Length: 383
Image: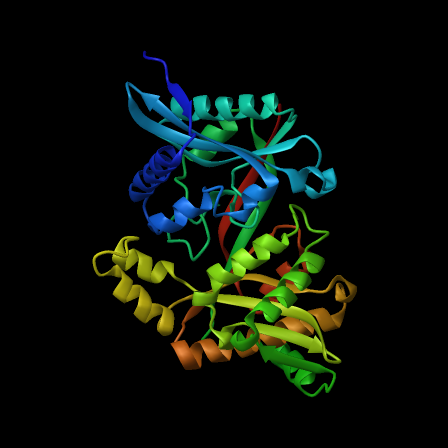
């Protein structure tokens, strides 16, 4: 049996081959949604993605008889090295991501090559898959293969789980998404909490204001960095990443779906909701040419009948474990629900990802009647 040859990616052409190979694999996975090639190229471009400003990255492609048969990334987030080990990362922790393989033999060879690279960089432990930032597409899909993912969520074939576990990886953390039909409305208890908050003069919830976009983005990211700072897997956003995220997200941000909550005039919480761009990418097969850009432009202006995803929300740490924290969350969720139905005829929404041990967020998801529909696993291994 010929040896699998694994080559490092070192230039623009190699990055293009890496992306195209991933798209080929995704095309053969049931319910996967093809993503825009240009966006995927940008994510792995050191000159475009500010993640590279605090990370060391090596991409690899596996070949069999000269044909590409798999890919993987090995990377080290230097900000993650500074975090407490109890929060998932910490000194000596590297990552693998962008894992695709034709068969288990190729998969094992790719994982071994990524591990060797991490060892050479002085790492003693690996977490994965994380492609590549914890804020991008963390985890391997282990539940929910029977339906398509929403915006900014990964989708992996079911057999990858056995291949990764067969390489000596053990489960570290579960990330879950929750699905809910939004047309019927929330349970009476939640409605009473919302109405109570609406009568409280100290509380004001407002839409994101695109006329002061940079200011509101900075406010949201400040709350996010504070609210998530004790969570497993947390790595702070840098100013460069804040600017980058703001520019990338602005076209899909509709103010009536994104709120900031203020207490006594001070921003203390936020909720971000994105219409599901995968809804249109499925129709255009992930292509903008020749006519896909027309579909995308129409959709961006008015994403009617689209599902909605709440990828991020946060409440300042000083309010954690208080009734006010959940009240602010319910108020924003309810207003966004009403607007999503009235303005976009939305039928369903997805919340997450949520850490399996994030009791506060799990309680909110349970209270509004949502159910787990997808689960992602992050694995660990000592090197």
